[in-house]
Length: 202
Image 1 (cartoon, helix red, strand yellow):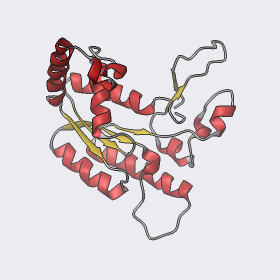
Image 2: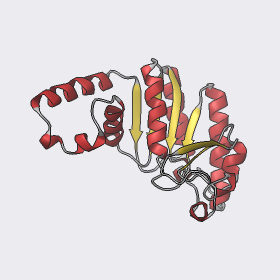
Image 3: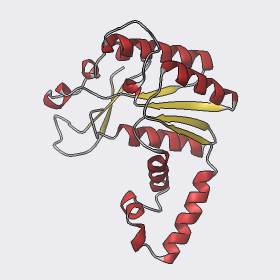
Image 4: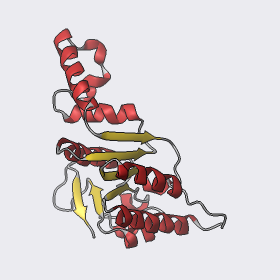
């Protein structure tokens, strides 16, 4: 999806569903902090909106007690959040193997386009991202778990009528190596509204 299209929100929703079904989830975030993710998880409980969570000074004592209860429920969910601004392929591989030994069933990488490759060779960014995609796919096969990578669309996708695979930012190798590609888009040629559409493009 393009910037602010809801990639992280979509990924967190998928994580929440997996967690509610008892699956352990690892979330590597280079965009949101652990606090941001916790806030969105609480909002998914449908007992508080994100707006209410951002204006805690105006909630009632009863709401505060409910919030405390919801927060305790969230602490029990088998979620491991690792929020650092930079990650390399090797660091992700090491963490993923550690999480797998502890029963992890799903790994999210947000954003995949920010992952660096541990190499001395000066490759182009497109080539680096292709290598990231290759290593990520190999890791998913090795650990036998799904890995969801959030990826930005390039600026041209805003001006074209429909967002497609060739709009993936910086590298066609991302689409080529992915098993599935879902594109988040608010535009629809037949309906002029602001609904978010999830388009399966691979």
